View: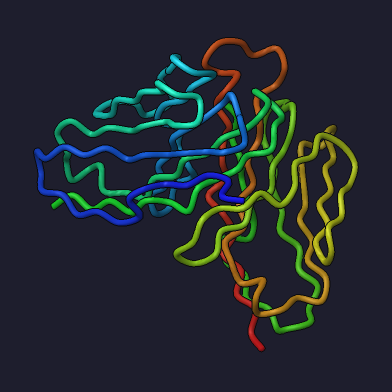
Length: 113
Length: 115
């Protein structure tokens, strides 16, 4: 019963490097989300997807790209990492748009030096 | 955009105490979520409610739509309840487009339960 799985869980990057965070869910959910969590702030939506092949920008999309080639996977990419992207990233999925229960991954802690 | 305020920001309790965490929001919503995050851990959904009251074990969540306020209660608190509790609200049904997907999260309440 995996639920939502994120990889990697920890990563250290140098400024300008690129990386991809993978989110996989086994609940057949249509809706998937990438959030970032920073000290003293609530979770903020980076990008989201309402189904396979679709993605859309959230509240803080700059510097990130996403893809949803398969329904179960939602990838978050950083093309050229910056120190401001040091954060904890959470993937979530839900079965309904507005009032669906959210299922979160364990989080991925990214440090950009 | 909805504004979500949680109180208190930090809470320390003795084991066995009754605990209340509050959440207020500024505009109408379709649902309110209570989430739990243990130190260094992932986030778990505790409750999702749009009216009334829900109970799960020692946890009780209530919501007053008219007053735009929700409370999370923990009865007979235990050290394993130590975590950050996060309130989040789903946008109202009349929102469309990107706004309809964007939950607004509170900053969280850090609870420490001392044995």
